[in-house]
Amino acid sequence: MSAKARIVLLAGDGLSTRVMYHALREEFDIVEVIIERKPSALKMLRHRARKLGMAQTLGQLGFILYSRLLGNSSHSRIEQLLHRHGLSDAPIPAQAITHVSSANASGVASRLRKLAPQAVVVNGTRILSKKLLTTVNAPFVNTHMGITPAYRGVHGGYWALINDDRAHCGVTVHLVDAGVDTGGILYQALITPEADDNFATYPILQLVQGLPLMRAALRDVIAGRLTPRVSEGPSQQWYHPTLFGYWKTRLQRGVK
Image (cartoon, rainbow, N blue to C red; front, side, top):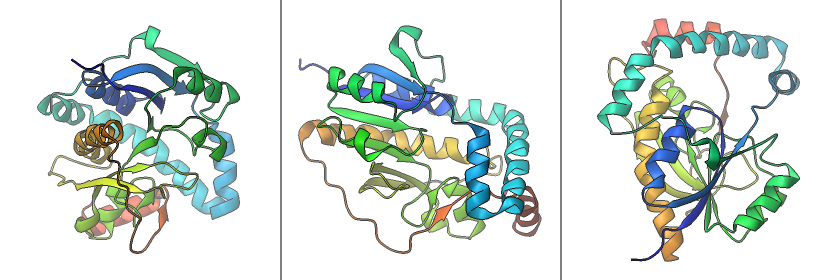
């Protein structure tokens, strides 16, 4: 029996990372989970304000705070979806985790060189630097919660529904480059939200569909048959909705 393929999980802390870990560990040897500290909210807001304007940024901040309440009220639906698909969000064993300040910190690069993984699975990190992406001779593979290139950025499923674009409401597994979800596409799948779903549960539906795609991509890496394709069609980066915009479209179009 051949040894399991060696992978590193480079991620932010959160439910999707825990689910990803447990979904991959039976088939692949996760030699380490590198968890980066959450980026500074103040720095993020300053960057957004410079790029989008203060009014838009404050509206997004209002929605982010509201979305936390929405997530708490959707807990039972999230648990139902995880149970339905046999997924676990149990804590990752502490001994498997290395905490870092940033995925782009110099210590991460040296750590990857030492671990020499066959693939790096990326989940919920900040944008990775070109320097980090060339650290090891292994692909960095990400699960993006949207269909690229039309829905790059955040909340791709939600924005597709807002645009009545169910043909592009889904998830993408792709190679990571230095852009924002611009790497070569490996696999994509669509989701079909049910009446009980909302902004907080769309990512869970996408995660459920994305996990088999990630496993398939990692098998391709190990077999030497990785065949990324170039993104086609209109490309747009999306951000958080504002609180006013969310409620306006929810009342007008029924998208929760």
